[in-house]
Image (cartoon, rainbow, N blue to C red):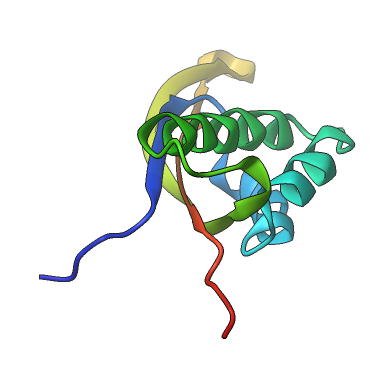
Length: 119
């Protein structure tokens, strides 16, 4: 088994489409923690606000579990946006017909880790 390193946080069953969140996630994946938070704070998308909350939670977990760490020593090691379940809703159409409206959900998983030491 591969040993997972880093500090993890997850947000599940978020009512936002994964297709809308993934482009935001691509911008901050692999970045240092303060830089990632700064990028997300200045984006208008709903997904940016949700990803920021999960990254903050993972960083808080890291700082709580390892007192020797500082915020500047962390980076976003892994950032996944997975599909969640879909809520099926009926959408009334003309002549008594109905269409199915799928409300998609996301699961966001973030792993932050200490920056590798050079030398």
